[in-house]
Image (tube, rainbow, N blue to C red):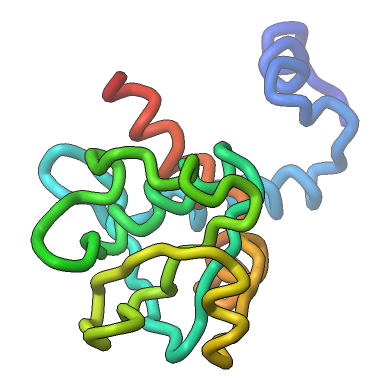
Length: 159
């Protein structure tokens, strides 16, 4: 593909310099879709999350937990027992570390939709709940890596 030097530099910066025109058009279309999230007035992405019955998400790392809390907040979900925002709550990952699990939108003891609690993986397993990975949760929710990037960018800019 013939490009003038300015175009080539731009494509190199984006990591797209070796793509055909067709591939560039497809990549552009994917990026448009990824950035077409609805947003609140403060530019926070809005995610329409599905409540998963008797399901908990295991967050084996602090990073997994942090990202999941950001996704929950963009989905409008709150901590059980009130209106506490996921990213403003005390860090609950430290309680169980790699065995930490968070309800997937329906609390264990009160079955509140859009609210969640946390406990150990063994707690949920012993109560016949399905325990899934964050990646499985994102796949079920149709949250792509591009959407996760947008969510994370929003919260990074707020710091």
